[in-house]
Image (cartoon, rainbow, N blue to C red; front, side, top):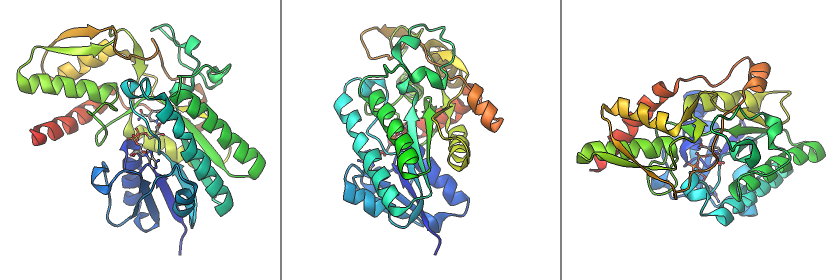
Length: 326
Ligand code: NAD
């Protein structure tokens, strides 16, 4: 029987889409989907796949999850948007147990390929003080001063992947995701990120006939946002690469301010709202964008779904969820 593919964090946003894409490729019988959440809370779940509820912080759970697999995707982490990571640094750092125990289990089981989902939050704070930031290059992660808590965990886990490759021969691949968005993800409850949160606020205002919304920060902070389909395509390129041993940016280079993101969502919704800026809410760094020189060099490709096109699909899904719920 063909060996299995483990997707850790399969009940989450990116993990759910990854399982969906592997199922579409005809690999359903080979997939083991694992998440700590109860099954009814998974964003996407496929009955034809082996689904397990396990806490991957535990070593024996990782051994069970990895057993008989040839490929591991580690997308499991205790994470969320700025509102979550700024207030839960200890919890974010505990995800170090997930990657550590998965790597140890992968090494013992002779796994052929191991993918780790890192983040743009590894980048040093002093390179992100200006909204007019130039794109962050892979080398900008050092000297290290990442996002406290979440970013330090990501940087350490990246490093662990490197040393498991160098010392134990585990073929590890690491991508630094820059804000991923799309349907089937968190849009409320405190872990949501800006694109989904703004869609939710605009839709709630529209449905309630309200004329204003709250924006975290002054709206001038800049980011880039990658549509989920680009993320999946990039993950596949990176995990199958023969040569790419070091962490690589996987993100869009279409930089926008939060105000411009709100403009897009308002125009999709067909309304204009008064913006109340909450300057004491968590807002993260002032400016962040992905420098895609390396990914273009290695794959001749970069994430390029226009923000407006991806946001239309995301808005439609969140609108559907909210009106159904109502
Ligand atoms: P998500 O929160 O939707 O998914 C993560 C999943 O991991 C959740 O379903 C959660 O229940 C699961 N999980 C948490 N602790 C676990 C444990 N102990 N055992 C098993 N499962 C556990 O997040 P996502 O957006 O899908 O992110 C996936 C990965 O990509 C994460 O590592 C995240 O840090 C990274 N990442 C995401 C983004 C983004 O914009 N979404 C940006 C940078 C990095």
